[in-house]
Image 1 (tube, rainbow, N blue to C red):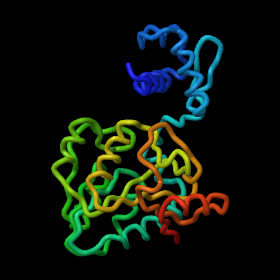
Image 2: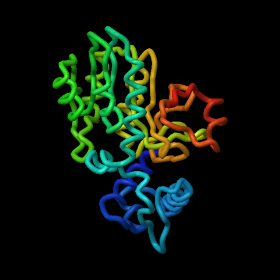
Image 3: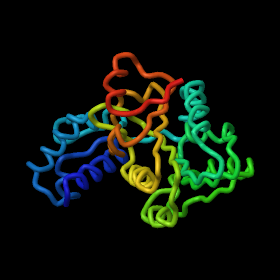
Length: 248
C-alpha cells in the first residue's frame, strides 16, 4: 500500500471515531508498527492529527470539510466580492466548469454573459443555473451528503466527455509552498481533472483561506489565476511572484 493511501485511511478512521489506537491501524493497514508510527509523526507534522499515548486523535479537522449550510454563513461579503469578480471573467458563448462550493455558487447571480454552457458537480449549482435559464450539465456520480458535491470514479469518467474554456474552482487553502489544497482527496481529483480539461483555471478564495493548508493538494499556485477580495500584506509579494492575482 502506498504511503498516501495509508494516510487517507488513517484520516478516514479518525474522522469516524475521533481517536484511533496504534494496534488498530496496524491491523487495518497491514503495516508494521514502526511504519505506522512514522506515518503518525508525518501526519502530526502536517497538523492533521495529534499523537497520543498508544495512538492518535483528531486535531483541528484539516481533513474534514464543513457542510454547505455551515459554509454558507461564513465570510459572506468576501465571498460575494470574489464571486462578482469571477463572473466578469466569463465571456459570451463560453463553456465553463463550475466547481461545487459556496463561493462558486455565489457566482451564478452575477453571470451576465450570453449563450454560456456550464458543467458542474454541485447539485445546488445546477438548480440555480436552471432557474436562471443557463444551459447546464450535472456530472453523474456519488453525491457527498454534507456538501452536495458529486465525486468519485463515475464523475471523473463523466467529466472526460467535456472540454472547457475556463474552470472556476473553490479551495480551502492557498499557500506559497503547498499550493492549493482541499480536505477531501476524492474532491481534489475532480478539481484537478477540471483544471486539466480547461483552457484557463481560476481559483476562488476569500482572504481567510490564504496561508491555510488542508489535506489534499490540487496543484501549484502558478497553475491557476487566484481571485480574492484581499491578499494579506504578509503574503502579497510571495503569492504575486507565483501567480496572477485578481483582487477587489
